[in-house]
Image (cartoon, rainbow, N blue to C red; front, side, top):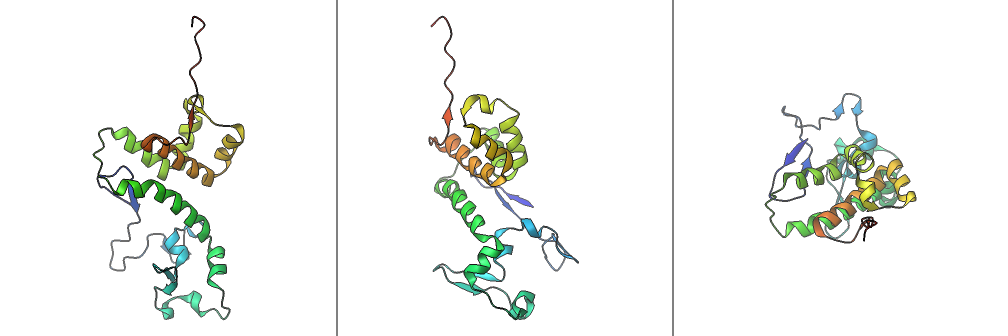
Length: 187
């Protein structure tokens, strides 16, 4: 994977293809896709391309796509659901709520910790989960018990929470509530 550096707070991670002549995906082996269950949105969409008007077209030569050789034909909507695309579309919409406002401005990040924390929240959910549960995070923010359980059990809920955390920390949106400091007895 490659990290594209720009003057933006939200890092862009892209998959680097093999360096040899074929430029194939590094996750494709002789046995097929080694990350099939966790494959990204473009792989789930293949061989379809979504046009700007919401219609679909083929991005591949039908002779090279073994799936198109299947005798049974499916509706595009059913196929997209079967491929798990709707969840990826939902996450992309939430991600866009963070990235689109930042595209309008170039940021010179003075504090590298902000960049690191944003990268962690978006691209290293295991580390982000560790940050939430093994730091003073839960002592500082109001998070109900049900939400805490969801964050422990679901990477989807954890990513949604990461989006809210970034909106809170970067944009100052009221997506999280800070706990009030305890009153001292002398006050």
